[in-house]
Every structure is written in structure tokens, then in C-alpha cells.
Amino acid sequence: MSTKQKWWSWHNQNPHVYQMFERFTHRAIDAGLVQSSAWLIINRIRWETALETKGDSFKISNDFIAYYARLFMAYNPEHDGFFRTKKMKDESDAS
Image: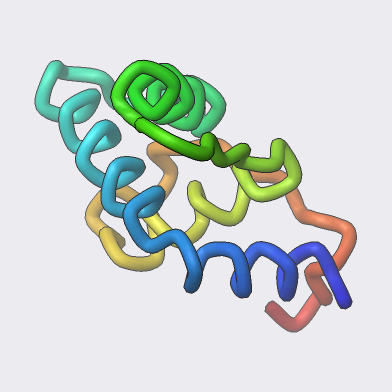
């Protein structure tokens, strides 16, 4: 299973992570940032969930961060380029 497939499966089981990613990214944009780091957003989510989550904690793999950046920009094309991305190992030239 590719990293992307693992992320997609995890994402489908944890939709609240993307909801927070989108909310915190829009807050950064609303604050005037024209570009930011997906790592910054994920670490904000990690902070929030460490303080707010009761019971079993969950971990967001660093391998998944780039996929959240891409998903945000796909859903919000007006913010394409807000996160800098590089070609990933499992991306073909046709994608």
C-alpha cells in the first residue's frame, strides 16, 4: 500500500483532522499570510488535540502532511500555492 493510500484510509477514518486543517489554514489566510507551512498547521492541530482530546490520543504521521496541503489547495483553488509543494515519490509525471 502506498503512502498516499495509507493517508487516504487514515483521512477517511479521521475527517475531523482535515476540518481542523482547513479551519486553521483559513485563519492564517484571514490573518494576512500569503504563504505558510503545512507543518505549522499540523502542529497546531497536534497542540489542540493534545490539550483538548480526552481518552486515547491519536498521532498524525509526518508522512501525511503534504497530502493535507494538496487536499486543501484542491478544495480551495483560489489559494493554490499557499503551501509550497514538491513532487512526491509516488506522484507520476502525468498527475
